[in-house]
Image (tube, rainbow, N blue to C red; front, side):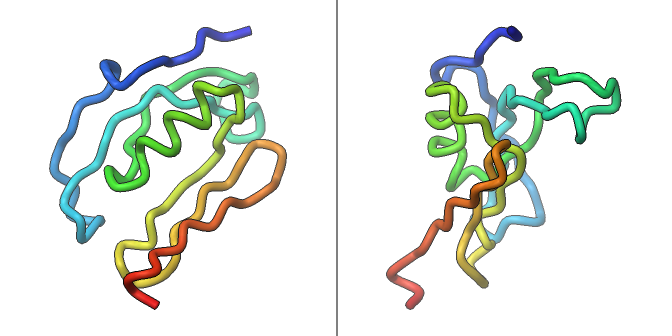
Length: 96
């Protein structure tokens, strides 16, 4: 199996105009075979919304692999889609 990314020493913060919260974190995340250009499971560096990056990192470190994520950019609830098809909703109670 591919190596697993652990800890937060593996990311860098950079500006991203898409997230109203102002940053994107580059994480080493698992790419399922159906989304991989190689057609095989692999790990790739991808930009993750900074406000949910710790959650995405913790899930992947625990072997609960994420396929997609979005914080909602302050306009809607965030989501993290897992490789097995389940979806985790990130609800900001301050916006409700």
